[in-house]
Length: 421
Image (cartoon, rainbow, N blue to C red; front, top):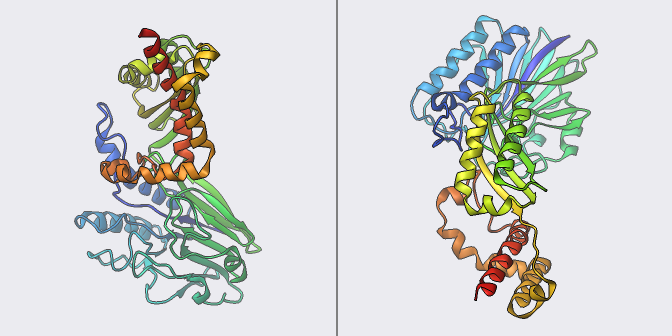
């Protein structure tokens, strides 16, 4: 029996996005988060006395700004060398051979697989054969598995592969492969990388995305870490997740139904945030809150959102002991509507409601609306077109949901204006 660590998508020195302008955010800790998580991985490898470590691509986040990133990695590999632990890794799309222009000599316990063709490295002590190939260029569209070497007889065969597999939302379609490709190769374990969400792709042979080692923004929520893989005396691998992140991103939805004031909403948020903090082992949290429901608190919240966002941020700092920060507050509340049905459905307001219903229910109308928004999308600031806070103006489901949410607010304002005249 022996153990090894399977890690991927470490993205050393990648910035954490979403808290840069937060008044009390620990800026230096955020900058060092990926390094600290990586150090946790090295410490885990040493404490568990693993046979080896696998890194399935995207060790780096792109070309180094200077040599410090590379020097830091070498220092951590030296820690593993002192413990007698070898490291095997492939380059992914973010650290492809053509993208990393600076290089440093790696310690002799560290093996980077060739980008020219697949190759095999063996560990005779454990009868293990590791097969892999690095990316030569970032946008690798070829299925690499057919060219991977045949499994070595009487060995535990492991495939080290940076891939989108059958495709995953939010990830570029690099080195695609099918489940049949993974099954038919005859390997015992597939150490996959590229997809940042932890996932067991296959049970037999065991094929796993461990996810990235440290969440970097609100699209990378929940515990992050590595797989600690145990190979039993019969050569069967079993994988256990070990969280190593030093800061965590969380989404929470809070139902405000029946609440009568914005102060009640802040109290409810404080309670939920306290419960959330208790669920995450005392780690610093960056939380995106969604406020939902039909409630009388809506008018206050919508009337002065900046005030209530900061009230919630203040509550987070209080109940979280300075370890909970609000990345964003999203409002999806409605006020109870009390207009008379005759007023609601008659005249221009009724025609407007019929049009809104028609747009949200008719795929053709929705497609035309999306097309009409194309010009607006091109004028948005870059951070609203790309990244975790992007506004998806090309997503018909999102637009339909937004239309339904603004419908009551629009009607209320029109009714109020009509009655005032």
